[in-house]
Image (cartoon, rainbow, N blue to C red):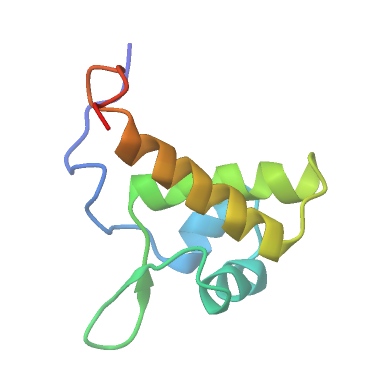
Length: 99
């Protein structure tokens, strides 16, 4: 039985330590990914990073590309930009939009 959700996938709720534990990516690596512009966690008024479930999914995607596909951070950035561009070109129904 799936666990009930009390927040949306975009809602920032996980601290860096929790995000690190959930993704098996170290806190220093999460900070590095932020410096590289690959992940942009929300900041509290006290400047604490908070990650959403969508952020965690992105971190897992990045970790896969770095660890398994052996892509460097610059390459990851290009791949993610290409994926976002493709998502914009293809509509919600999965069909290519008219040019």
